[in-house]
Image (cartoon, rainbow, N blue to C red):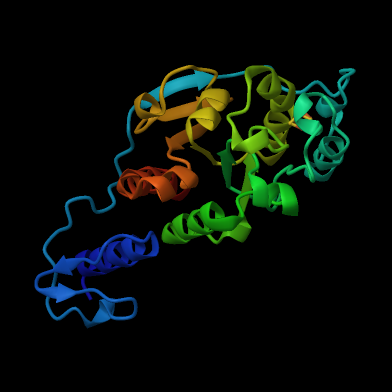
Length: 257
Ligand code: SF4
């Protein structure tokens, strides 16, 4: 099999994993198991992976933790210590209606950190981030770039569920964000994937729209940040799956570089 053919087949398979429409290529329809059965070599795919990265975007470099600081968040050394602080946290009003805190989960050696907005109902019930339908879609998105979910650290900007899934408010984000920043500081990932406007604006300290922030390689304390749509938004608007696919491939290329 030629490199071009292998590339195109991998592309088709990933499109299907993302839930894309059926693909017709040179008269052959790719199926869940039948990509290898394509009868003829495909023509080049317009958006096949490229090694070219988008231009640089914003850079946010907040002060790092101070192990001698009075703030206990800054004195943590591990993700478990942060989760324990989150568990007992009452720094904002979101503590009042929560069932469980949702600090985030994933291995300490994760090279990719996914940041979402805040826990929803299922996350609040389970204490786990990105579960339910949006979580299933995130798992598919990660699989499409050959990253098992178990290898990724997944978390949110706020660690307790906003009532009725409303957007987290400014004071809630300000109270909670030290946990996120300390998690990133401990993890030192190769890439941060900010999913949704709240995550992107928080990690990059900006009010720019998600549309303006996409397709650029931003930096948080020097770590590349890629901005894309939140999986819950993709469930509402499947047309955004394609641009999301483009975004996560950028993250993949940075991981591979
Ligand atoms: S959302 Fe964050 S700051 Fe607010 S109570 Fe929960 S853990 Fe504390």
